Image (cartoon, rainbow, N blue to C red):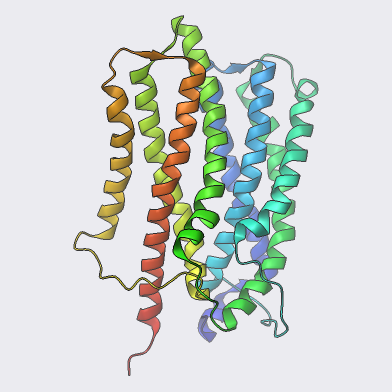
Length: 336
């Protein structure tokens, strides 16, 4: 809960929405050139044909419309706990509060993402000439995503801010069974998104690699790539899930962790988890030596590994975030 001193330092809820829109701009400005560089510089020497550019634009806008809106809601809820924004008055009347941030954002982000992605991808030939250079691809993917996601954030956050503040001020909610909470509110949606993103990148990557070497993809190449992907996604899922779970802990939706703290420091366990996933994925395939697989199979493997890596990443994030937030709550409770 926020103290009076913290409330005085917090910004107004409406101003905070503008802050989240600015953060959204920075995130897109950072993400767009990185992914465009991976697909069109590392895998395609800086230029793109019509179909790959349209595919990249469509899937990038669609997937990151969902990700940016979800991130804005999760960060807003967490920042309310940290007294970074405040409501002029917490609503006393009952407001419909959508507990699962995916359920709150997906009706907006899926529809807007599909429409925007289809319109922009379909009109790619009108915006630039083939071959499409790196800067053009950035503008084609980034500007529509930035504009529409900023509008969605301006619609979604003002609805969720008073609802979350009222829910936090009210009685504790019943805890959700851990397996259902983890699978429905973390693993399932992220697995679908990561599968789409990594299959799209993998198809472009391995198709060009096969064309360059004049044959199928060495299994060692695919194994090394999958191991790297696994480690990156476990880390990203840990980061995302631990942000999402913390506001739920305050609402009482996540069962309190009553287990004793492990002897090994928690952060070391998480690092070992990242490395273990990468080794488990890489080692068996590396033992296959010089065997090869078709580009489509390599892309499917990359997507499958990405989806599987969501599971330990989300579990670690929920476990870590729940323990850390529970410890913070207990530290603020005065001892009698």
